Length: 139
Image (cartoon, rainbow, N blue to C red; front, top):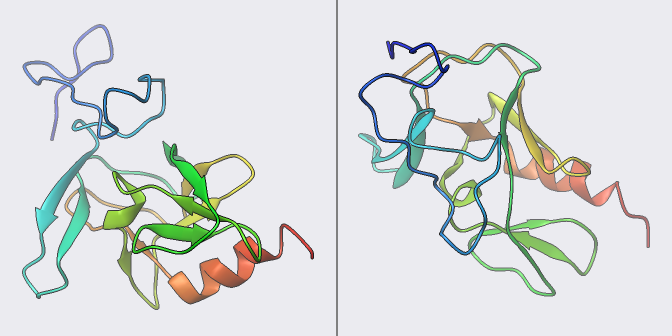
């Protein structure tokens, strides 16, 4: 468990934003205090492991990225012809049929679908997310 000092920041731990320097650090963006990118033990590649607990419905992180007109490994569909790309954070969400997070696209936030404990990976149902996300924009 990370001890927090009077400032609310963990004691004796350097805070590193997971987004690159050209994205200005803002409150709510994911940091090394909340998450770590690790190699999974079950050959699923790299994933995001939580270092702190999150309650159901709580904002897990704010998102940043770029909008593209084509898909890549790092994109999430936001309309029939537009895709949100976040190769620094969303890329490391693991797929699960019992996910623990969802993306609130209009707010550009990740929310907890259930309580998440330290040590758990962030998981999303990519198929369900794609169907929900495309419903925000009707052709």
